[in-house]
Amino acid sequence: MSMTIYSGGTIVTMEEPLYAEAVLVEDGVIRATGARETLLQSCPPGTEEVDLQGAVLLPAFIDPHSHITALAQTLGSVDLTGAKSFAEMVQKLQAFIQKTKPAPGQWVTAFGYDNNFLAEKRHPDRQLLDQIEFPVVVTHASGHMGVVNSLALKELGVNAETPNPEGGVIGREADGKTPNGYLEETAFSSFTAKIPQPSQEQLMRQLELAQDIYLQNGITTVQDGLTIPARWEMLKGLSDQNRLKADVVAYPDLKDNRALAAENPSYCKQYRNRLKIGGYKIFLDGSPQGRTAWMTQPYENGEAGYTGYPIYQDAQVVSFMKEALRDNMQILVHCNGDAAAQQMIDAYKKALAESQTGKQIRPVMIHAQLVRPDQLEEMAKLHMIASFFVAHTWYWGDVHLKNFGEVRAKKISPARFAIECGVIDTFHQDTPVIQPNMLETIWCAVNRISKNGVVMGDEECVTPLEALRAVTVNAAYQYFEEDEKGSIRAGKRADFVILDRDPLQVNPMEIRDIRVLATIKDGRAVYEASR
Image: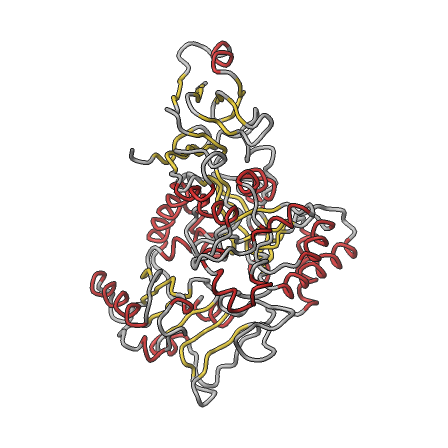
């Protein structure tokens, strides 16, 4: 039996009362909160005491949506985040090649460029990337599109006769036929899935590094938000070898990989060595900053009448919903545009009426960037969860103003209205799109400021406490783990994050400057910052 008392700082319980003087942990489980002296009286001699030294202890953060295996894969790629021009992109690629010396014919992969922030204000093309004498693929920061060079097109079998796949676009040159290297949505995901992968052990080492990034940000429950067989093998390999320090929840792609759940029943909705399958995932549209999100009203500053496009027809989405209900599996649905949001709502409502199961699978609308107030009211009736990528206000707020106009752009991630109409909301980073920095996300939700200093709809700002709930209590509920995680209460797991300041007490503009000092999983320190 191992007992520990934490005291000597601020303890935020996310319960009533909100603050406690001390918390008692036994064998990784919270046993009690209260006054330090009272808790000590119930402990045997030799009980360990941890002095917080004035720091702040909260329930650990819970990641409601990201892609840990995709982050792992980017760790073996060229990081193009922050690249400001085509020349800088090529320079980074060439520097990587000079350093790593890939074998002839080996693929070079890169991640993180954003055409919105390049001097050229457009995507690169194959001619630019033909400066690289290896097959190369560069992935857009959104993960929804990317560009390959001529060698890569040949390897992937993409040519002038290759048709656009359903729900995707192959970029073409002026003749309307020759691929220019740009691949969008399903064209990107389906073709790049053929790229040879590093060894399984190398990928698992990168997965451990990715896990450490989450732990450094105070996150102890992590998502793999689109699991395919190769990525499942990475996760299961790490789990089987007891190398997972965080809990990981996988969501297989429902369209092509539903069998993953059927083939691994002992992982469905229950952890084995910190890994479980939480449900299914589908995509209904693309990216708002990439102008592929499916809207009911046209984008601005572009082709007249263009509204983006759907991935699936309505009947297919209804079928997906019926499968999830039949299997009693939660479904995560990627929806950025309001047309995609409506398709999800209508399909789930229809499937629910026809199934008559009465099951509550807590469907989650992932991103919900441009969901409308009337749609949120409908979601509340259907017990849908809205998981907002609220950091869009900072990272792409100015782009959204250009793409959607002021009225729509300032309503992105409408967390305040969601709360008011009774929708459970959570906040995520969609890592590797951005880093899993929960404190930055809380700052974004509270302040809603763009990089150019525009307030992105102050009526949608939430309080620091509401933002904290979104990444603790509400996130635990999203995973059906509200009885185990999300707050500091007797009987729950001792998953904590220790911060240098209290997010509820500092100036709201300082929240993103708060440091994570330590992360504790099941009562054991899994990350400690150097002081």
